[in-house]
Length: 181
Image (cartoon, rainbow, N blue to C red; front, side, top):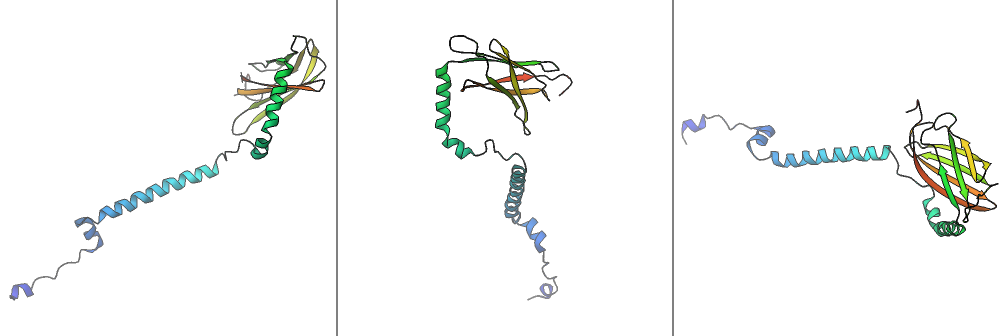
């Protein structure tokens, strides 16, 4: 052994960062970092999903599903009675606007003396509803004044009851309420 080898400096310890830079030790850390980013993004999506719209559209969906045969029977009975209903919901709302329904039997004769209720509903995160009973003005026509609180796409449903027989219809309308967005 020579004296030169005894007087050499001992090998330097490079430490973790030196090992990481000089070797391929950074490759596994890249995978770990990628998974951490993936977990953070997924966790954020879960948080957003749980804090926003719950997805519930129909309450008591199971019970309503069990009664679906009753819905089909009611639709068949409505088709057999042959009533004709025309919904005249205003496309532009304002003071004094009329919503009207014309109701005729299967022979085209006016159905009078019944109870007719119109419900307008705007489907948004916070549903707006307007419910109005319509008055019989004769000759099968039922009317009421209506003021929609907000412009937009509304679903108008009408339930008519004349002498114990019922008829139901739904129509979609676009309403522009003047001065209201």
